[in-house]
Length: 408
Image (cartoon, rainbow, N blue to C red; front, side):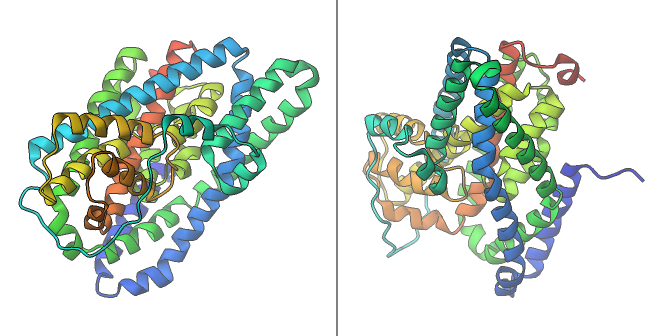
């Protein structure tokens, strides 16, 4: 009997979670008390490996690039792609929100008050990237600082020579990365159970009574995510990497399904790395550099969500967003995506910065809080798909894409 693929197993777990969640809508406390803990345990296992995996893989990836010039070139390509697609994503979100008139005729009274979060300046954002204490950054899980330290440390090893004094350190982190890949593969065997346990309580708690009043918002966000994924990623992958979009999406479908269920870019990182390496032929040196970076700084789906939700809240509160105000939203959402934690719910936190930038009431977040998880799942899929697309394009332009695998 043919063994089921990982994507099939995850899909079965997803469907089973939806069905059981629907059946348990009358007793959601049972789902949250007895089923959700298994999902939480699965996420904890994922979180367990994130810091050592990102640290070791980025150090090895940086060292494997060969020289500092190549590091700068690849880093430049990666950041340029991420920033361009993020700006394009939030623009799509605002355009589709305008065309659909997403918040028209919708109003929900609320007494909720959301704590104000002051938007950091560009200078503060850049300064925060460099950790004063890398060990503290690892303990607190500050991914942007961990990434910065890993790249600097890897460049240092490369500077003293991988075959010289840096050999011991390189071999240590190379072995650590292999160990983390093995642990990841083992954890992934439990993915269907984890997916089931995560999806069931979401459906059981957020039933039709909660979802239907905000169905238009959900549809618009999902449509924006779909448009961006199909047109932006398909076009860039086809033009710059000469790979069929169908091949691309089929290859990363396990990661997309996993991201949809967990709503975590960081949690999906291990399976995303495996998909682009094994199914598309991206070299390990490129994937281990581009993908961990993308899991932190590339938030295209979150940008779409922020654009649509900002427009939605503006319409609900009767605020007319001018073209200049929407331009400010594009800029703020693009900059806010840098350093956004790749964990469930982070996008809603960053939405406060976008609302503040154009003077919209933060209380409006309470309107979408009930369906944020549903929105979070869609935007996470787009986030990790963008990471994969970038890794493929960078690998292709650097001559580190296995064409035999990519074109199979």
